[in-house]
Amino acid sequence: MRFGLTAAVFLAGVLPAFTQPAPKPPQGPAPKINGKPDFSGLWQRPYVPDMTVTTADGKTQVADPSLPNDPKTENMKGRNGQPAPPRKLLPYTPWGQQQWDAYDAAKGDYTGSCLPFGLMRSMNSPDPIQIMQSNEFLSLLYEQNTWFKVFPLDGRKHRDIVPTWFGDSVGRWDGDTLVVDTVNFNGKTRLDTNGHPHSEQLHIIERFQRPDLGHINYEVTVDDPKTFTRPWKNSRVFTLRPDWEIMEYSCEENNKDFLEGHIKGGINPGK
Amino acid sequence: MKTKFTLALAGLGLLLSALPAMAHHSFAAEFDSNKPVTLKGTVTKIDWMNPHIWVYVDVKDEGGSVAHWQCEGGPPNSLTRNGWTKDALKIGDQVTVEGFKAKDGTNTCNSRSVKLPDGRSVFAGSADDGGPGRRSGGAQ
Image 1 (cartoon, helix red, strand yellow):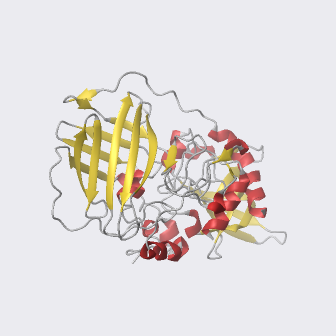
Image 2: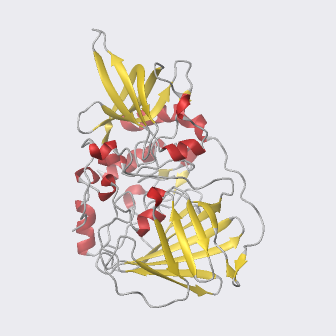
Image 3: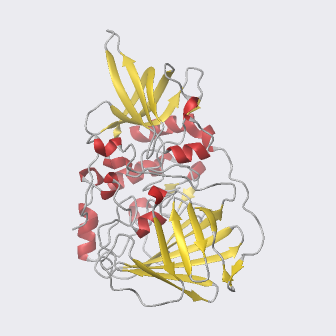
């Protein structure tokens, strides 16, 4: 409790600087390209450090409602003391549970040494993301360490390539929903900052919808039979920020935490 | 440990949804939420660089000995988007830094606030890294 009170005092001091309200997103219909929604733009995303959490507003970030609640997190308080939804329990296999139980960021995490965050943890980062779309391809330009991803939109088969941090993605259209299927992960990443695990069998299905000019509805399904007994989902809303520009970000530039040994890196976590 | 931390956050009841920053690592990887620290001293240097800004403070004790501290803040990109520049703090400024000590026992901290003598906070919005008052692991 001492910790909570201390943090409350600190927050009282820093709160005013967080009060700058985000401008209202532009309104209008979703733009089109080649007859399909055009997701191009610079998007602000909620930080999702824990994919088992649903935000108190029930829409900024939504954990899979079909998962059981974590009884230890019942009666949680959110902003302004309002009740917050309990966290969810992920459906671990014995192997997955062992990976989760053994995880301790203080003993080493690959992000400390600025290794690629991987697809899911990059989508969970709070930095904005620039989307650029053509008839044939969609590119995700992550401000987080200036990483990027480009994939086709024609539903072609996955390539047979060496497994990678971000995996091999293929997009296809399901009506006006863009479905992005990604496999072929190297298994060296974590799903989120809290360290939820996955294996090299990870299969990510992302669904992008643009209901209007100012928003993207994003839903991801995490499918990994080695780590989880069944697939589970997470969803959130992105907001268009025409008043922002993407900026350079170098994780390695002055990474004193790692270079001075305050934090441990790790090249092969979870194995 | 993860659960204990979550419950502490839940009890806090003050968590913010619009935090601008992030970290490239989790708070718990480096800092100890059970070791808060308050530093009053003189700014000697500021690193306005990715992935985090760092503020260096000399803290003098009653005997006149000076301890050199370094405290990690938020990423410059998100601080910039929230209207901060590195000129908000100058070398020689007297500051009070409140934060949490590094687990390794060095004079390293994660700053949760940096205040000038008139009470103004600068660089508010330190790393959104799951540390105290941050969202990771808790309700929003």
